[in-house]
Length: 232
Image (tube, rainbow, N blue to C red; front, side):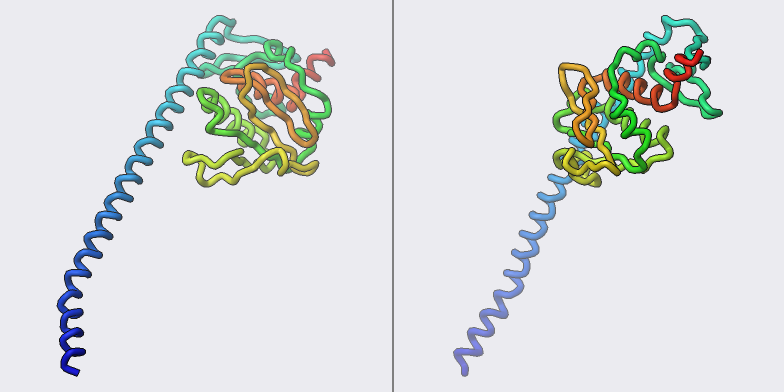
């Protein structure tokens, strides 16, 4: 019994030291985790700043292009004017903005079937790959935001093709998640420029400002601007 008491006393005496070491280890681990979180946070800030600067650069480039045009232009019975480096016009009483004029993007081929999917659907998916987007990410983000805000009769669900630290709240989606009731617009960074329909998916293939042109081409068709021009 005496030996057992002594052992218990040894354990008791060792207790505070063990507790201190555990606390020290925990503190070090917490500090390491804090440093790692801080590094990740700093990296995220740098990436977001790069994205912001790229967006500014894109708007500057389009501002130069717009500046070479006249202050007021017409197409299909719609009058366009320059406002804050964008072309604006009213369609059905709603003021819309564009980065190009209708005739500048009319050459881009969009199938009637693809436009029918966009016009008739209530739900749509917007899918992109942040890791593969590179310098095209700012343009993709502009178009994704514009589709959500300007196609107000639709419910847009955005997703990433691969998990990204910049988009932790977005689910992982792909063309496989699309359906007839919820077609997908896939932002695909590519050296070749085209809009391709594949099943329930509409691929926007291009890079940088190509996506802004695709955006305008789709919206002009969606709001009937080209149809209005044919009727004149």
